[in-house]
Image (cartoon, rainbow, N blue to C red):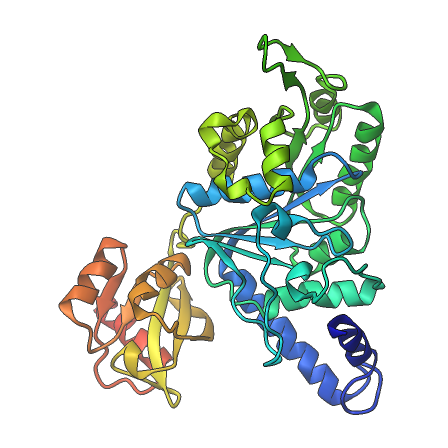
Length: 402
């Protein structure tokens, strides 16, 4: 079994000791931390969708939120970390497993051109088998979702967590400290009691709370149009007021959403014809305002991209597999890192814009490329005789002071 092999491989390291007990494993973990850091730098906002208890429609809200953001043109990732009850792939009708034969994950299944999805179900030969894992294995899988999946640049990563405040939400909070939580509840008092625990969890682990959503808030009768309360109404808003957290809205029960999710046809459901998706629109608009998908350019900070080959500044990006990203604050170099040049150079200006790049230093750029960078507010300059990337940046700074 694939997962049994994964469990056995994680109990001991390949060098004969317990995982992390030898220097080689320590180095491997350090490389993993760096890989996670690189991935997270390319993701603008991380939204953890959680709930205090099951049965409140948390996964439906997470999937619908990801779909709505993607349909607005944003680059979106949807990561299902509900390892014991994953439903995301089934709701979207994704049935093909990922091929693990090469020992490395492929790209996650692409649903829309700007939506990527991953779930543990994609790794299972038999999706009906129970996942019987302890906390450390869950933690490691979540980290692998971040290191071995090629997410690229994302405006939003929506993370569907299991109910409660157990291993998976804790692993997300530890691995993605800049994640922000969105809590889903129903108006029932028993659900609201568990929501209070979720709010307390966010406070304890320093997880920023975006707000509270009341799902299944009512049901619109298809015959008379009268709105009927399935449970109660307004409990979510009162709880949000009590704990001084934003109330993001109430979502009605929609039989169309239930049927489409059960049949794996949620992608085919028209938002205009769904009362649930219509009610979700103000929430999505609010999130895009408080979490804008803008570039990372900071006022007063310059960020230089310099192509690099064999440790030296190269004339063009197509001749280099890496580029230096150098940050300058108050006229002084404040940080430098090496990043891989993306394989699709046509998308490179978008990558640089989202990294917050303000200047490109390359001697041999065509007029077309210069125009693209100019439209994105990125200045292009040609370094003269600089060997190292930092020398090229210093040369530019000196010329501006000149």
